Length: 152
Picture 1: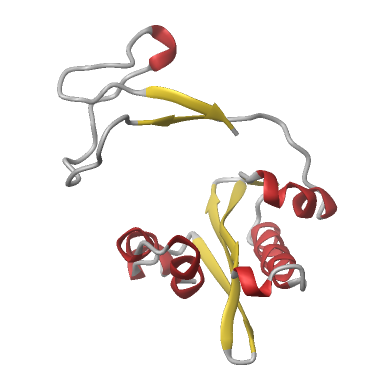
Picture 2: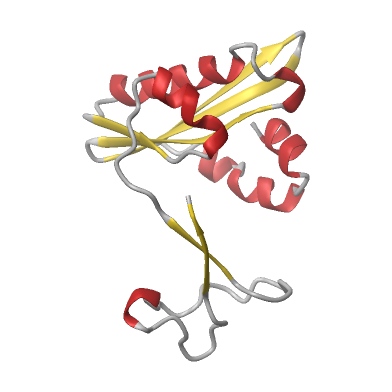
């Protein structure tokens, strides 16, 4: 999974964080990697929580798209969610993934606003204090201002 995501993101540190043994070997996670000609070309992960499962880390290498590899990984992740007892399986999608997920039977039920911190990003100072931008609490002591960038 890390190889596919690193080829897409180019950020080894971010990928290493999510591809750590602790995350991938969790009892509540199942990961899938699709290989073609001996190379990883697509991946997906299912994370279980109570009666639901989330599908994450869905990615296909650019040179392997439109060949069914992403669909295969996603189908395996969705099936695993239900086989492990989930009553509902959810995922978040980019616009690029919407046609595939609709084909697989997913239907949109909400959108999420995304927020970005303006300015350069420095070393990770740890989690900021909780704030709620929708109630005017978008800025709290020791945290940068949060700016709404777009809806996905």
